[in-house]
Image 1 (cartoon, rainbow, N blue to C red):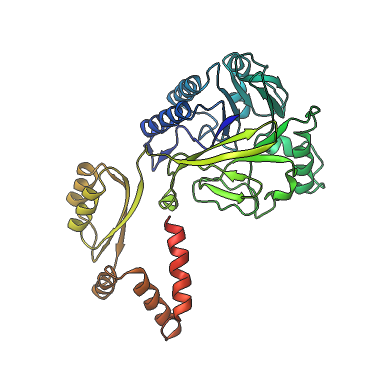
Image 2: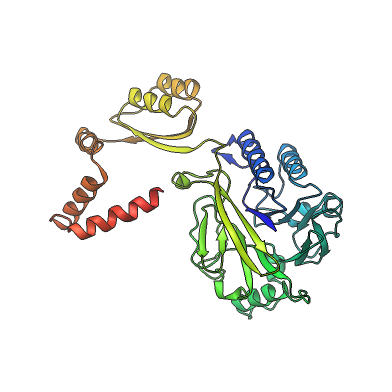
Length: 388
């Protein structure tokens, strides 16, 4: 069975109050096209469909248009709610959606089973069985465990124990011992969060250990973290990441979706493939020592969302501020730092240094000696990995 894993669409999310709905429409259309090209049979959307509990009508319209395009008689769609979603609102259309081969899971409500060439032959509160008429795949489902679910148990029961119980419950109905995968929206131990994810770990109290996932789960499709990351490559525990860069700490993140196949007969994952997404504007940070230099950078990155920091010896005039905001639509955020002539000269002298020279200068300033060659090489190697 050919499957797509995506998450964290955050439809309606703005960047410094600037709408990105057009970009979201473009990248979601790209995902639909990729599903057609890959002949995908099951689409998994692992939470945070919307950015707010009360999305705009335009955001909801884009969501429904996208899932209607994704779902066909040959392709089922499974959706779970995330911490940004109002699960009751998201699930309100669950029974209507299931008639169109879309199965929405949020809290205590289960959608109806469907009927198509590839469809859910069985749906419960925390699982679905997807079949193509020849073989079946069991999908354990744990939407974001919010305050309502956390309140089901006494507070003196440790979070890890509650999570263990909830995850195990997802697989209790697999009496036929079908090949099984897991879909959830949570913070897994080892994951790296960023600025645009609402913190749910509460100082580490709600971080989930990967060992809570049963060993016979073939693939775990996670949502919540916006950077694609592999928690456990041997067990295929993976965050797909968001389809767009949503904050400026994501500027080095390449956005993608994950395709894979499950051999239901032999119970194994095959042909796992990460496909980059090309649509949507990139986020860029620029620093300039003059307004004119800033304008040149904004022109250079005219098809991006730019955070521009101006390091000047004085404040901007009203005319300069108006020109920057009106003539350069790529400017998303403007920051001003007042610096002395000496600081300006020092900064200018560093602008043309390469990574090796910058590290050496930092190390010498910190320790009053040249950086050891092995340490420098290790730093450059790590930096190279980060920039990929």
